[in-house]
Image (tube, rainbow, N blue to C red; front, side):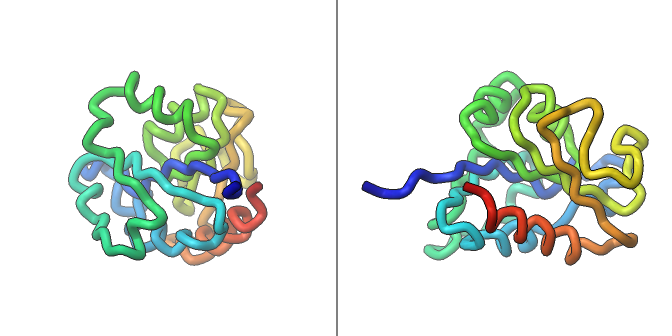
Length: 157
């Protein structure tokens, strides 16, 4: 009998037309660096639009992630997919709000100076009790954010 999997949805980029998208989105390579950190984890891309093209499937990458982006044509479908996941890891996008509103565990990766909704100096959200915030300690510092995510991912059961 194989060990149970942890099913994790991921989003690494928001709408490229958003005024602050360049500082709130990150490269797919950062998500790819999470693969294999927890041997039980299987990732599902919830990324839509042009940023979804960043997934370059090789045999190695394909072992860890399934791209669901093409089927996510509205929030109702996205919500039904999120309901089946154990965790969502996302930058500051609508998916963070949707997962939080659904009460699913969600790790939101935030830029140094985020939108007012995320407040400052806290790792949780008063709006979404199942959300954990991972914040850049300085502008552009995704390395620290992903080091913290990797540490937390290692401890997921």
